[in-house]
Image 1 (cartoon, rainbow, N blue to C red):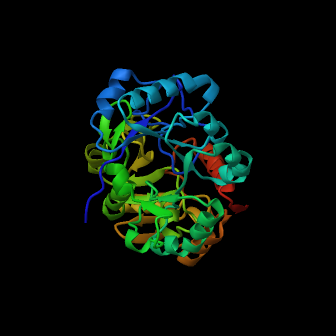
Image 2 (image 1 turned 180 degrees about the vertical axis):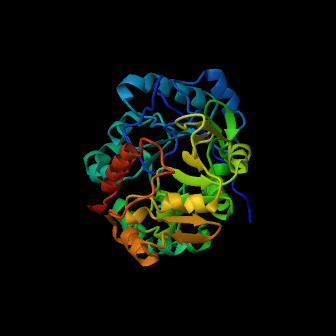
Image 3 (image 1 turned 90 degrees about the vertical axis):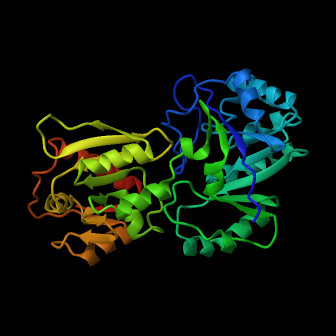
Length: 388
């Protein structure tokens, strides 16, 4: 099979500080990435980058949204476009800021519109302005196993018919499940799939000229390590996602208990994480660490403990039944005092019940009451019913 040529994408973020995007997409890992630029990039940097491109076009994308606060930041965007055009390349823009697309008529060659519910609702107000612009629509797939994605094919076909133009279905970079792309075909070029392998092998200009896997964490590879490492226990949102991915398709960060410092070293060496000790004191046990990757990826909250018994005691002290489960080396571990079926039912129905028996809180930090208040709010935002 002929391998596709690399895409060449310039990552932008116009704000000098912060993240220049009006959206908060669940699959976006860019917001806190150290590789995200702040402000425009020089003509020299752009020229050096695009001269390596062997396709006919350069993409300008987020990071943040290229059309964010268009009136304020358009001079930087237009200067970048002018540099690309001067070297004979076409320009593609990926955006959600559809109210500004008409301003690019005759300036860019292709526009890819990233879809979400808000964008879909607003399309009718702006589509009449786009005559003469080559438009496609782009949708990031939910991070689900292949059978669940296959079951959604009729919905994607109906969406394509509604839009009336090319629909690009993008594999979710946060998905931990391998997809069988050979089955995700429609028999025509109106709907196409883009695998994360292509994104991870393409070239990007962020703060440096690099390949995708240098700046974006491969969550599937990370998950394979975490799910098979016998010296750690996963809990929290990641474990709920493993147990019931359709009910819990997203997880914001990764909570884990490690039984060996080697786990931290592997995450640092192989996955570009840097860990900060956030324990309350130098003598406290267990040790708490916050890990952030140099690549765009999930934050890791890691607790370093000595024994599997301590790990299970920690899980069994959770305030709600839905949290009394962990995953280690291919197996779920349920708190036996609550029972597997009760925990599974709580997660699958989003009905979390407080456990009123005396809890052993000896392994928790002193600010545990505040942690539990925040956790309750997080569950409510995720659609849980809380039974106190």
